Length: 260
Image 1 (cartoon, rainbow, N blue to C red):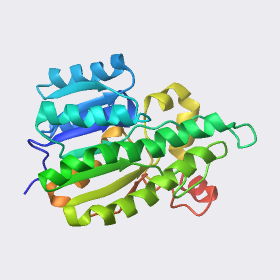
Image 2 (image 1 turned 90 degrees about the vertical axis):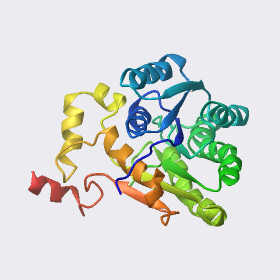
Image 3 (image 1 turned 120 degrees about the horizontal axis):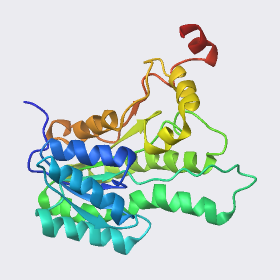
């Protein structure tokens, strides 16, 4: 049986750009009714327009994942528009650069509230409906940065993503008996808007660090999430899958200099 999301109701947060946009497009193409959730109406509605223009179903809901009220409204809106919640994809995240010596409490909290508490609020809002339905899929976009590798200036981001990978294990155990699975993907370097804006020299240096020889696309992440979100992944839970073209494999930069 081919993997499909036909007839499923899916919520994707942070779907106005980057990985979230790619996930929304792929899920819709594969048959899901997609609720595009984003803080910016302009970006979110543009993604919806793209999906509808391709002949698929999507609608927009403006929300901030840091708001419990917004996340409750998000879940209720999906139920009202699409009859339930089969898939919740927690994608929204931020990664401002800041050395620990320069960070203040507000900057730290903003990252934690968005990247970690936002996952908590979103999942908590969707779980009751999934239990009523007799099952569901929770999928989360994590990162290799934090759980697998480090980057100066991203300690707050790394802590949030490490927390995400720990959170899904506990949640998976709590929800296993309800036939709700919880999994994550940990992307490496992906060609998002911010990376494009960084310019050619930066892109080339990043490409050289990836054994596969190219930078990943949002769709690469989306198809992995699609598997976790499918009926075929019913026996997989509490896992974080690295998708990085082999980026974390080299023992040292020397390995890639030799390879290139």
